[in-house]
Image 1 (cartoon, rainbow, N blue to C red):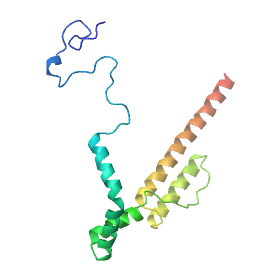
Image 2 (cartoon, rainbow, N blue to C red; image 1 turned 45 degrees about the vertical axis):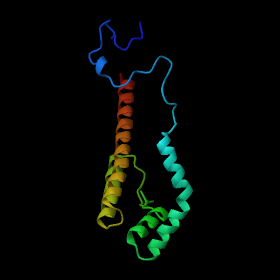
Image 3 (cartoon, helix red, strand yellow; image 1 turned 180 degrees about the horizontal axis):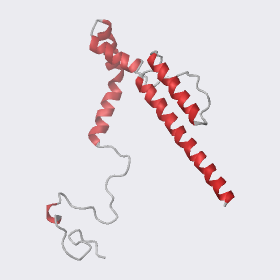
Image 4 (cartoon, rainbow, N blue to C red; image 1 turned 180 degrees about the vertical axis):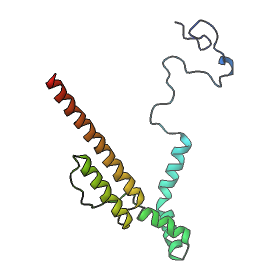
Length: 151
C-alpha cells in the first residue's frame, strides 16, 4: 500500500487531510528522540540549578525575617506532608466471613475513637474487601471440587 497521507485505506482521500497542520513525518523519521527535552526547558533547568543555592538562602532569610510565604515554601521542602503513615491495629487473620465482620468492626471502632482517619479506614476496608472476595472464591472452588467429586 502506498505511503501517501492523502490516501486512506480505500484509495480515497482522507476527509481532513488538507486541514492537517504541518506535514506528517516521512517514513523512518519518528521525530524527536524519546527523553529529549525542549531547549527552553533545558535552559530554565540550567538557570534554576545554577541559582538554586542563592534562591534557597534568600527564602530561608525571608522566612527568618517573618515572611510566612517564604517560611511555608522552606518548610514544604524540608519536611513535606506525609502521604500515609503506618497504622498498628490488632486484626486477626481473615479466613472466614465472621473474621471479615470482626475486622471491619475493629477498623470502624478505631475510626470512631479517632485512632485512624476516615480516609485510612476506607483504604483498610478496601484491603479487607479484596480479602473477602478471595475468601469467597476459595469457598466456591472448594464447593465445586466437592460437587465434582460426588458426581
